Image 1 (cartoon, rainbow, N blue to C red):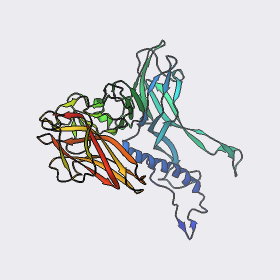
Image 2 (image 1 turned 90 degrees about the vertical axis):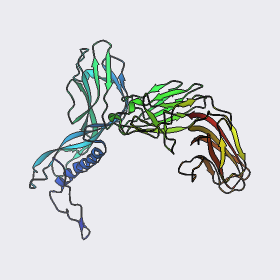
Image 3 (image 1 turned 45 degrees about the vertical axis):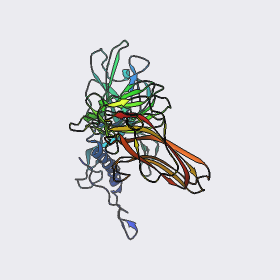
Image 4 (image 1 turned 180 degrees about the horizontal axis):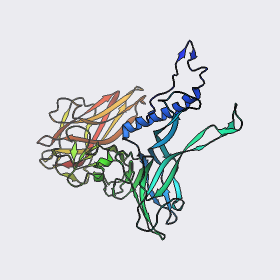
Length: 445
C-alpha cells in the first residue's frame, strides 16, 4: 500500500482545524510514515527501486575465519510498517493496514570482527552466503502515560540488522557481499555491485600503478609518483553497473613522474575542453593537478573512458622528458602572438603533430594596492576568439601589495596548425611586469 495521504495542517482564524479532533493521534502516526515514504520515493527516483546501495566500502576478513571487518555503508531498503488504514472509516481503535516504506539504513561506524557465527551462515567451504543489511528500530526512553497506567517507550531509535545465510535477500534487505567460508582459515568475500551504486572511498597510491575495479569503492585517488610515471587504469568503469560513479584523481607530489589515466585497449580518454578533447590517455604532470572522472555507463566525462564507435582520435600520444622552460615575454602582451614548436621553430615536436600539452607559469608585479590579475591564454592559430578553443592559467590577488610579484602555474593544452604553430597572449590588470614560461609535457601525432 502507498501512503498517499497526510493530515490537514491548515488553520482557520488562526486555529488549527484539527483542534479537538480525537483522531488526531492516528493522523500523526500515519504522517510520520508518510514523510518517510515521500523521502524514499525521492531516492528511488534518483537510484531506482529499493533495495539499492548508496555507499559501500571494503569488507575483509577479520581476526578469525568467522569474523569480518565492515566499512561504513548506506543503502535504501523497504521497511514494513503498520498505519491507520487510509481507505477505511476512522474508528477507535483504528482499522490498520500494512505498507512498505523505502527507507535509508546506515552502518555509520566501521565494524571490527563482526562475528558470522552469530548468524545462520553455512561454512562448509562451498555454500554461497549473502551478507544482508536490513533496517530496524529499537525502543528508546520511556515515560508514564497520562490517561492510562504504566509507561511506554515514547521514542524509537533507527538502526540496522546484519544477517548472513544462503537465503537470497528480499526487498527488505540489501546484499553487501557474498561469503564462502569453512571452519579453518579460508574466507572468500565478494562485494556485490548494483546499477545505482554511488561510491565513496579515498585511496592513496604511492609510487605504484592502480587498476580500478567495479567493487573497490574508490571515489578519490591521491597519487604520488616519485620519479616514474604511474598508470591508473579506468577501463573497468565502462559498464552499466558503474553509472554515476565519480572518481577524483589528484597528483600529490612534485616528483617527475606523470599520473596517467589510461582508458584501456581500444578506448580513448575524453578530456574536457576545446577541440583537443579525445586522447588515448590523460596525464597529470604537475603537483596538485586534479581531474574528475565520471561514468555514464558508456563513457567517462572530464577524463572519460569511452569506447563509443565513431569518435575521432588525436592519434598516438608521445610521453617524453619535458622540454626546458621557454620564456615567452617580459612585459604586457595584449595581442595574440604566434609560437612555432615544430622543426622550423623551437623544434620541440616533429612535423605533423596535432596537439600538445604544456605546463605554464605566469608571474606579475603589482603596480598598486588594487587588485592584480594576470592570465596566460593559448589558442589554436586561426581561432576567431580567445574563449571557445582557448585554455589559460590565471590568478587574481585582491588587494595586491604594490611592488610584489605573484605567480601561478598549471597545465594547458592547445591544437597546432599544419606548421605546428599556436598563439599565446598575456592579459594584465594593475600589473607593470609579466613573465610567462611554457614547457612541453607531451604531444600527439
